[in-house]
Image (cartoon, rainbow, N blue to C red):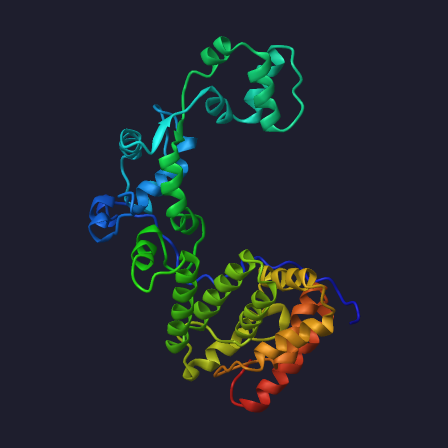
Length: 361
């Protein structure tokens, strides 16, 4: 590949197509309280609801009093009184009051270094080293006075309960389709029973097929991207690359959500030339493909073979580029070869004009 001009970075660097905007409700009536959600939820074998399991996961970061809680407790899960949940979990034996070390651990490194410096002690090292240095070199009476506020800690029962419902912290930290701790709770506890990751995979596959059937190709590729990320977490790199090949294929198709061919003349206004096109590779997807290439130690031709094997099995009601061109575009983007990209988009435009001579683009 010949080197070309360096492409200027585009403003939108997200690897997802943004199709909706999340609006934080402005009135309490728009939020479903946890008490109402609990009516349709299934308790764990330890008789915990999803939001209680999530409180266990966060408990070590909260003091026994004087907390300021994150907004997601209310806006995402309808939990208004997190302190009440903490006290309930404490009373039921899932939590205990933390010790001096856990209180010190909640402070940031700057605070710890200031305390060490005050006692003429070294301030170098990782946070764990700073904590151990304080505990071993400074009297506990003085430390208890300085770090008087206590945090919560999991008991053995709490650790078991959290481990057995590990889907809760996972889905809280991973945005996958419309899943959250409440919706996944119902899916997890419905037959057939299997691991939460298998349940999530099945759900994503089902949702992607629904998006495709509805001709919502933007949502479809987003869902396939979720699935590629999911596979990467499991170190299934080659499978993840195959899924990314689908994402590339539909990213460069010219299709969007609710695609309707009667509006092709409107869509086509944003297809060409390359410098003005909205049908381009999201940098995050390009990076993900190249990451897979490096992990699998693939030459460019080997990468093409794997991606083309998947792309050649796909179909779409519109596609601006051939599968071979799609893979070439990924590699051109990775090399920031603007000159080659400009040429390949010009070639695609000529082909499009031949097929649709009455449409301006």
